[in-house]
Image (tube, rainbow, N blue to C red; front, side, top):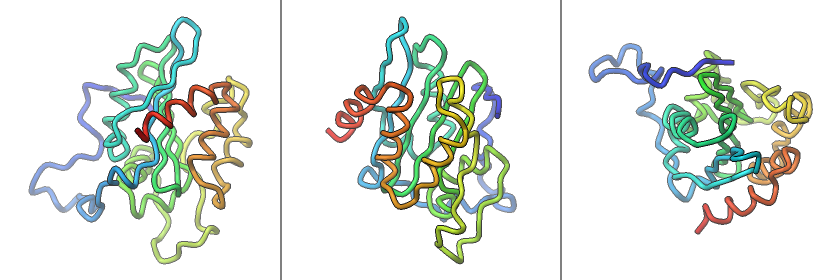
Length: 193
């Protein structure tokens, strides 16, 4: 569980010329609009669930996604859901200065900027890129983030590790469990428009 300070410098930015400590972010190409399945935010306003589509570019930058979620008018913060290429998802939960993140597949950090951002944010190493086997896949982050909403950690981990299913379908399953399934589907459809 991390604490986000919106006035702090982004955790993974390196000044030009400081390539000694660079995480080789230049090797990562941003996900294109075609790569991004969805980016949506969920929050409650006057107790009612609201789910809205966000800009696809937020699927490339964890810092910006956190900032955007912190600006939403939710009663108790906001949750962000990102799916990329049908392969993996990222969930970000922002409650004031408290930020929780979950990456469904650690191996995605070898290929995609937001997945690398999550690994860096958590201070986690990522698996070697030698083998793209499901045995090397595992979630990174806080699987207990929705425990208070009735989705226990082992259940969220079970959903996250279903690597045979499309990541959009997995996020929809999570949304159903959080009782925002209809709103989530509407926002996902609007994201595609």
